[in-house]
Length: 358
Image 1 (cartoon, rainbow, N blue to C red):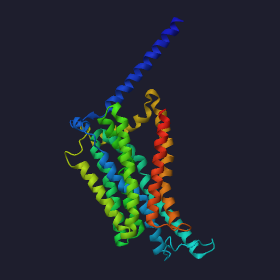
Image 2 (image 1 turned 135 degrees about the vertical axis):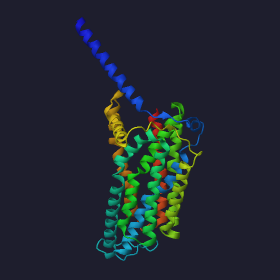
Image 3 (image 1 turned 90 degrees about the horizontal axis):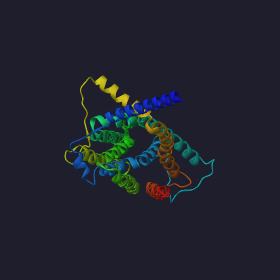
């Protein structure tokens, strides 16, 4: 019996030693504090303007893209003009106009799918890679990277619309958006920045502010974009997108506005050794199972992935369906509907969070 107790004690001691070693390894990989950390911590407004400005564009991009693809295909391929809401007549399923609109919707949906694959497939890898990369190089560089991708994407669409270039040219902008991390990386780095400069007591409130900075600009922009498209066409919204994205990038890059929260680590060694260490850190994120962290990460990803697919696909599908029969909505009505949907979603989410708090 005493031998068994001794074996048990040795096993427990070994397990505790292993756990302590894992904790030490993880702490070694944790980003160190930057000299500007204290200045960043003293501010109540840090990354919120970046989120606000960036989501004016990214929150409405799917709506603008779907409307443009549908009307571009209708004009170029089918020589068809969509009726306005006032002149909309519901046709039977054998009517030529109804069949034409069905073909246009199908073609536009196919293009949206191809563009979505081109932009969001790289995000599976770049989101994790650049998120870990920010622990070594700092948060500001990782914040600026997706903004550059958004600028390239918006500029590509603007050139295609202005010069009436072929639709496949848009793949360049979509790939640039995906390879630089896009909005998922922007949000994750912003939340990491908030975690760097806040205490546990302050963090919940600051995260709520970040979420608010994300939701409000999308709703306001959805309302404005519809009127812009109706008045000036599809080129005007991209001027707005480029302007807000440039201001957000300047906010990140100009010294003295947004302070760095993470000290850049030692860059000694070859590029290959640094990349190996970076990828090893990503692997460790899922292999270390301290306090059952592994299954929680896998569960969160399993829940989060289908939600993202539904949310990003919803906007395109609704836009394509609403423009055609039987609704024949204008760009203004589409914008109002999207903004209203966002408000209702936010109210439901807020009430759900309240229920979970009890």
